[in-house]
Amino acid sequence: MGTATAGTNSRTAWRNWAGNVSAQPTRIVTPASVGELQEAVRRAAEQGLRVKAVGTGHSFTAAAATDGVLVRPQALAGIQAVDRAAGTVTVAAGTVLKDLNAALAQEGLSLTNMGDIMEQTVSGATSTGTHGTGRDSASIAAQIRALELVTADGRVLTCSEKENPEVFAAARLGIGALGIVTSLTFAVEPIFLLTAREEPMAFDRVTAEFEQHFAENEHFEFYWFPHTGNCNTKRNNRSQGPAAPPGPVSAWIEDELLSNGLFQAVNSLGRAVPATIPSIARVASRALSARTYTDIPYKVFTSPRRVRFVEMEYALPRERVVEALRELRAVVDRSRLRISFPVEVRTAPADDIPLSTASGRDTAYIAVHMYKGTPYQAYFTAAERIFTELGGRPHWGKVHTRDAEYFARVYPRFAEFTALRDRLDPNRVFGNDYLRRVLGE
Image 1: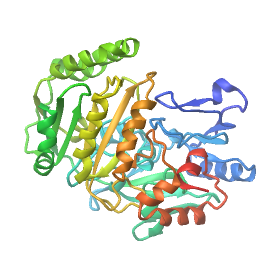
Image 2: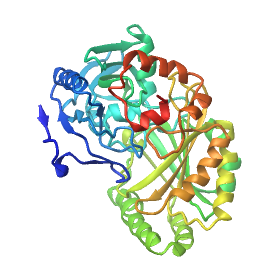
Image 3: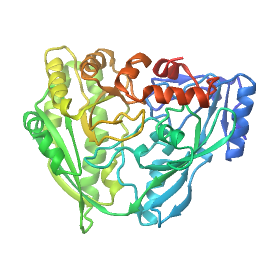
Image 4: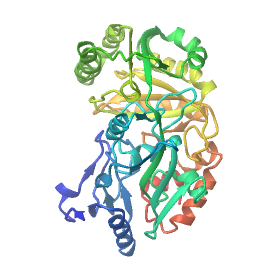
């Protein structure tokens, strides 16, 4: 088993993607098999150490931070089984979404919906509730049909609607509190084509017509550029084809030059000279042009994100999202805040996962971002005040200040989850400071 030497800071220090969370585990283990993982959990429990699994560190919260044993599941990767008759694929927990999507495409298969990046491991993405946007299709966790996890006593539990159904219900999105997921079985379907239509639109129009755009499109999202009245909309709908991906030049201009290269430069300038941000935002938001392209799902849903940022995202009842967004705009306009990142709005149908941000209600998401290294507290505090007054639920992997008392109010099935945790991990082998805050003692 690959074990980093305890005490050598350079080898055992861990830091997340955004650089806002770090940890100093006693040791890091990279199990090459489920048996090795079970042994690592048993050994840690015997030594009184806590255990956390970490994916690629794309969460902005300390959900995976530990001073105990940090498990890196990257060696537990790859497709384990494809069942075409059942329409499922089983993958090891450390599989990166990018690799899963590419492997599924080679098999002529696809997930129904995806988030907008695919750098995370499947277990990390589902455990924190990663989602895309969809009128009818929900988060990645909602596409899970079975899972396997190592519990605090080192046993392996196989869970589905038929086997350990109460664990299955909760562990699809467990924030690492119930055990360490070792494999996931997802529903998949024959690969299809999506046509994406990207189009600039005025803030007043897109908010006035929000419900109409939602109803008319399988996947609708938009970005609002603070300090402007400008948005960029994206509608993804299934298509008969033929495939017509963006040409290499236009793809490079949109996805690399504008979305990453120029955006990086603009944010660096904004961080150095905040007063320039509103005028830059007006120019940048007008530089986007309409485009339409058709491709296989993951190439439409996802895009590269090389500019590092810190993010807060809240799930709101869908009927309150326009009200929240208008209030956020008013707050930004009358403040001295300077925001160089667009605000992202997406949707999800209600699902049946106890701690899913869309649990039991049709949902819309508002995500606010700040460039890495820029003070974000004032902006996020103002946004969070708006979102919490409307009963918002924060994304488990993104910056927020809520605690167990708040979650017990906004999640009707919160007590069901904590009771299951008490049964599966009474000694909090999988606990950490973040879980103590959000789930309670």
